[in-house]
Image (cartoon, rainbow over all chains, first blue to last red; front, side, top):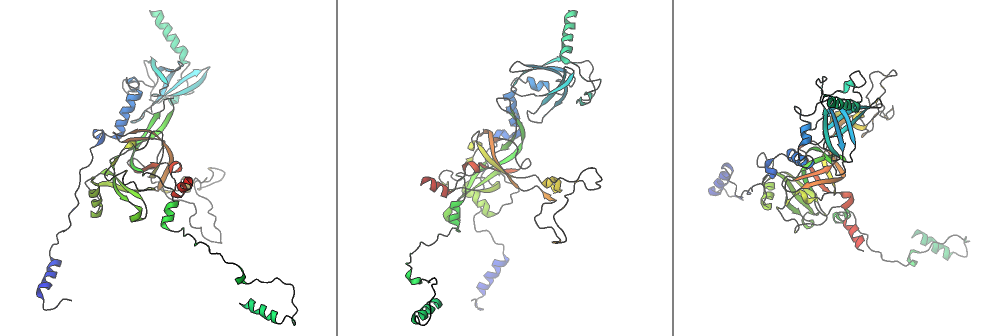
Length: 173
Length: 281
């Protein structure tokens, strides 16, 4: 109990309430963080570069799907697989991926007067080579030519068309 | 007592009362008694910890970064997700003697600004000798690993082996207020045949005049997504320790930049202490 005849103690209590109280405890120290990985490069860009180096070291496939200098729908291409089988057709559409290897080319031909389409994954390791055989002088409108199916603009038998072109070249020579 | 007293009366008045050949009740004192063991109380925390299916080592934190296409050597095309492992460090050990269970406290992502942490949590980083972390979380383990994983050790992406099966925990994308067709896969109503204005409604909920209400917990429309979800037994395709990257087969719950919990497959690797004792016997 505090006695009334002890003014010193009373005043000290009042001071402690009114005055600014400093923290007696020590503040915790803050350490530095770890060094940033990949030199601060974003993860998706880093992994995409690695995947390209693995699946396309020469950069031939990436050149094919360049929007300005590469393929365009309407071109005729020949795809050879690792087991030496071949597929020839004209490009209907190119599907592009963003920071991944999910690019496809959709090819259309006519086999025995029946329209047939094949979707080709561009960076699949089973594919040996993709070669451009023919580029038309005049292209049809749009980049995705789905509307030509079953119309008078539809592709014919592409294989015989290419053979005739080669024969013409030989005649000129 | 009441039966015994009757028996005595009968015995004393044997001559007067005619006894029927009824079943005789044997006295309790004639049966020899055996002392049994006191029953083991199984509803304690210690016994529960022995029963619980736990992993030998803790999981780690990861950040979802996006999806890519993955080609196997045979030319098979697979969907895969990229997960970043960003400065995961050990912060604290919780032992069974002190807390009642064994666990490890881990943290990810060094951050010095906009930390919503108090002094007590900052002291944890001081003790461990690490930078303050954006996300802290606990991982339960079977036995304490104080000697194997001392404070402040960084866990890298090669913690998991390539070809291993893991579980991934995350929070699913929020879909907002969704109808019954989207949320539970209800059939809805036909488009034609005289149907008007009800094509995507839930239909009957099972109520009538009695009970006059829908029972609580019935499937219907409501808030969808934004809940915890785990994907079990996902295959690890690639790990890169220096770059801090794990690539995993298939999809994972949650949006990009979401923080995930990766751990060894519970179905394959988790065991309880009781099971280990049984196998040792």
